[in-house]
Length: 107
Image 1 (cartoon, rainbow, N blue to C red):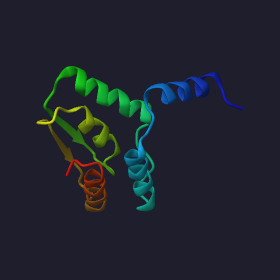
Image 2: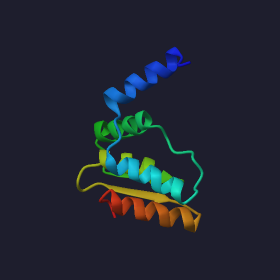
Image 3: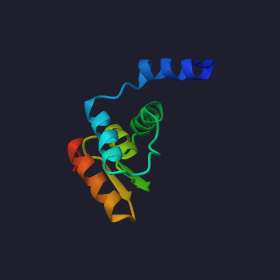
Image 4: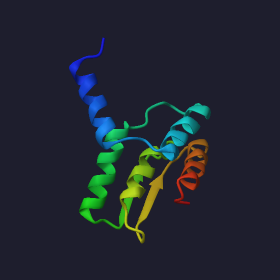
C-alpha cells in the first residue's frame, strides 16, 4: 500500500522530474551492463540540474561516475560553454558512462 511519502514522491516526480527518453535509456543501459543499481532518483537529478543552472557554474566535478546518469543531469544544468569533469576508477563503468554521455549528446 502506498504511503504518504510514496504519493508525495510520485507527485513531485510527475510535476518536476519526468525522465525523457535519453534518461530512461541511460538507466536501462546501466542495468543492461549489470552495474550497481545505485543511481539517483529523477527528482534528485532535477534538483542537481537546477542547482547547477541557478548557481551559474561553468565547471563541475563529479567523483564516482557509475554509468553517467547523475552526470547527465549535472551537464544539462551547465551553460553551452560549461564543462563537466567526472572521475571513475572502474574501466567498465567509465566505458558505460562514456557511451551514455554520447547518447545524451555530451561526449
